[in-house]
Length: 467
Image (tube, rainbow, N blue to C red):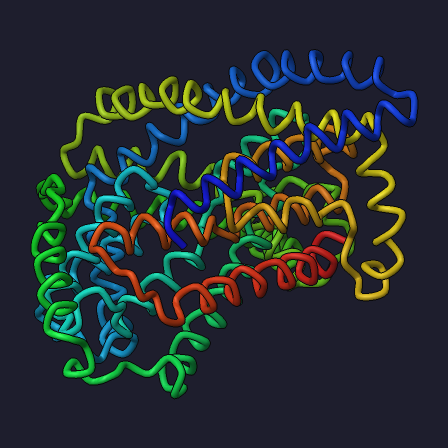
């Protein structure tokens, strides 16, 4: 779906929100509350959401820049290389496209959005050099886009930050749920892409099927857009022997912390041998089983581990950690400035719908049917908006957690969905548009299957882990 069509759809959706709210509010006598709520929500979007988010984003952007400068993206890329050869059999192992795709996936896993996008564009340009039918998406392109729309998330930083701003007692509780949901989404997305590419309706036709004028036009367009995107090459010095020893000690410390949280009885027995009295495990772990305790332990340790490991590893590789952290954190203000208009627009429109009684009416009508299949009706607007717009989805998510509370199970489901799904149509429009792909074949269906899987998995996993 071209980008201008997506924009047009969002224009109509936003306008419909406003008109429906005003008309329903006028006939239900709620216009005064609607007007007051609109202005209060606009103030809240800027003063209580966007500005506090700057600080949290500054931390993560700074930390992620350290990960990038330390070469962690390349390390993950090397680890993923054997898997990539099986996922993309049509791409030669030594082709530049393979390296570009691996780097993009590694950057996405680490949450390096600013680095992941140019790497992804370069990957698409490299894949286009293998395309014997310019203008038509290859099997490798469709699989690569399915992986992008269902990328595994180690830490869903934006969702965690929004929960923290809303006053959540344990905003990192969604780390294991988002990770598991994205694993499910990635598996289904890749599997569907592989199955769909073999169906007759999506199978690639021989290149001779196109007319000479079509081939000439597509080849000319592709040659104009397939210029590789320049990405800064980073090659820090290797870690010394002393540094490796220090990293081992650091890892052992966190392994011990994990044992204390996940298996307190075994940790206490081991501590008593050395005459150590270990602190009691957090009360929220209660008497849960070992699997649930392990997931909670990961959620508690994940953020402190990343906040300390990335700077330590970067320092051991010669990175000036303070300077690079500040340089990365500087981008937070620009990001906040970009999202404020989107937050205000979407939050105000949703607030008007809510004060007019539209959302409550929709929930009452659809509630029984959705409850029958175990789907919370409050999640419906966010799920429908997610494939179209990330900023609009963020506005709906923020309105939801402020309305029902950040520690509510439905809010945690929403945070997991937000952290494990992607703006599928936007991603496809940007990536395919960069190489003039007009026939996207099965890429849209595979991406939507991945998103749907992520939604279902998020709800089921949250019920099992957090419920």
